[in-house]
Length: 212
Image 1 (spheres, rainbow, N blue to C red):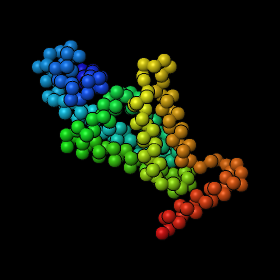
Image 2 (spheres, one colour):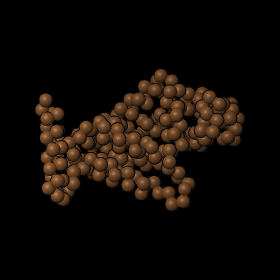
Image 3 (tube, helix red, strand yellow):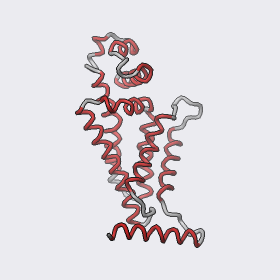
Image 4 (tube, rainbow, N blue to C red):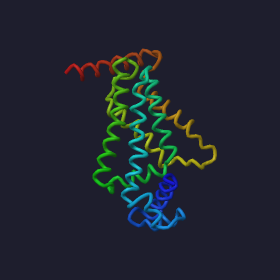
């Protein structure tokens, strides 16, 4: 019932807007009476809170569990991006609703939402920073790289359609993870003197920034 409730509400909010949708509308869409709806939620604000709990906070918890995994930075980044991308693919309409409604979140839910988003970003930054320290990744600004990678995962909610012909969330998540790693990883070999020189310059820039 909770899944149906969130899916129906997400569809109605997208169609009529948050302010233009009533609890009566949601009850009718599910096929129950408004008094029966109160057994599950008491307000539209509570619906938004369920989205925060089921989307942002759950994603942060899953990534925290992955932190215990060992392996190269590239492997850990792959697993993390796949985890986030698959969650977005599973409920794109809910992610779009939460994205549109962030400014409507009550203070308590907004604080939880922002805290979870910071945890997700910190997780990605930590992997990238470790990859740079190990020499696996280019010496780059890990915050910028992490924001770019998380943003590419979140944007999936706006164009991915689970019911589209040939839609394969796992293949999509694999591709996003591969693109994320390629965007930060050093090449396996030196294809030319120019490539080697570019690597040296990047290393010097990294050293100058951090030795200051």
